[in-house]
Every structure is written in structure tokens, then in C-alpha cells.
Length: 314
Image (cartoon, rainbow, N blue to C red; front, side):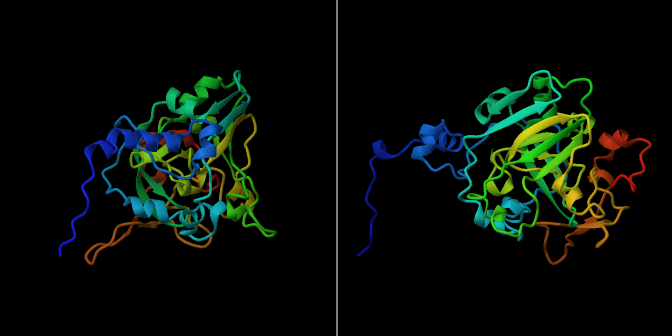
């Protein structure tokens, strides 16, 4: 006897638009009341992002690789740890405090950010200091747009960033012996932060950021090594003095403040002349390619470092 599944009346089938709206509602949240009903885990929701000319000819890295091969030590040291250990992290509700040397210090709610700064699609190369790379379609907006809202003072020269600290949700922050000092911190010169290539990303592949990729908002600076792309940002401060950044503080002989991609400046323990492109494979293809100065963005950013010794200021 052939099994025939029961027919479901059309009136009982949820419309696609309603389902997508529900996904957006769950992902973006609607305050504490919703959070008490629906767990605020990484439920991806579609993002409407405007197409831009910020793209590269390189083949995109498969989404599965982008979301399962990560450095996010707050969730563990192995590349697979962030995707395995971040399900309990609650990216919403979320706020970012923007303060320091600004005329209009402001705390932005994530919902406000999505309304004030419409996302754009930016396809960028991402080069890790560990000599591997990806090509990622980010959805985000220029950091400069957010800085304009708070009106930096004339004496502001740097921008400092800080990641959230939640040991109960981030197992890599638990325990007596820690891999890094928390919170994770980063910094840019103000002109770097205001450069058109520098964005705050809220999504990848047309959907909201997964927890393991820095939900709900992270920094992307494509001409710098990936560790500059601080994730899950809760504070942005403008300063007169150069701020600390985690890896430079942890190992100053290995990781500089600038962290510009440079094939001519080797890491003390490995060469930076080539990189392994994640997702490129095949019998007749090599996934190792030459590394370009400034990750291929030299035409746009080299002028920022005119006259600087890039070996001394690595």
C-alpha cells in the first residue's frame, strides 16, 4: 500500500511573506517582552542591502566556510568552536555606546542603527594574519556615517572599540586561565575609521550576522589583517591618544597597531608572502595565492601611510 501524506488546506499554510516577517521579528527583537517569549539566539533574517560598486572579481567563499571557520576566542580557540559554542549568545536587544571626544555622545539601539544607517552590500577580501583568506559579501554601512552623528571634536585622533563581556554566554571568557584579557579591544586612526572602505557590518550573504561572525555588529577594515575586525561591539570611543588593541598588547613583537596586510613584512613565525584561500579546492587548482600589499586595496588606502615606514609601523 502506497503511503500518501495528508493534504494540508491552503488556509493552514503560512504565507512566505509572513514567515520571513516572523524571522525578521525574532532576529531583530522587539524589546524585553519578546525576548522573554522567544530565545534571542542567532536566527538569521533577510537584510535588504543596496548594491554598490564595492566588490572584487574573486570567487566568493562558500557561506558554510565563512560561518564555520572563525577566530572568535570568546567562544573557544579552535576554528570550529565559535559555530559550536555560540548558540546561547543573545545578540538582541543590543546597544552601542559612542562617547569620548565627541560633541554628541549617544547610545544607539540596534533597531535605531538599522533605521538610521541603511545597509549596503560590500564584497571584500578578508586576510587573516595566520595567512589564510576569504572573500565575503558583507552587509553594512560606513563607520564614517555613525561618527558624523556624534560629531568628533577637533582634538580626536583615534577611535577605540570594545567587545561585550558575557562569560555566561561566551565560554571562552570563563575559567581561571584565559587566552586573552577581556574585553577584546581594538583601535584605528580617525582617518582610517572615516575611510569609505571601513564599515560596520550587520550581515553576510544577505542575512543578519550569525553569532560566530560577530553578531549583531562588527568592524570590517579590508586592507588590514582580520584581527582588526572586532566583533560584537558594545562601545566606540574617540580619543586623542592611540588606544590599546588586544593582540598588540598581548604580543607586541608579533602584532602591530596598524596591522596592514603586507607580504613584505613576515610574522616572526611565518611568511606573509602567500595565503591559503579558504574554499578554493580541486585537483587542478591551488588554494595558495600571492598576498597583495594592503590586501589589494593599495590604490585606495596607500596615501593614508605616505612617508611611514611600514616595517616599523607594522
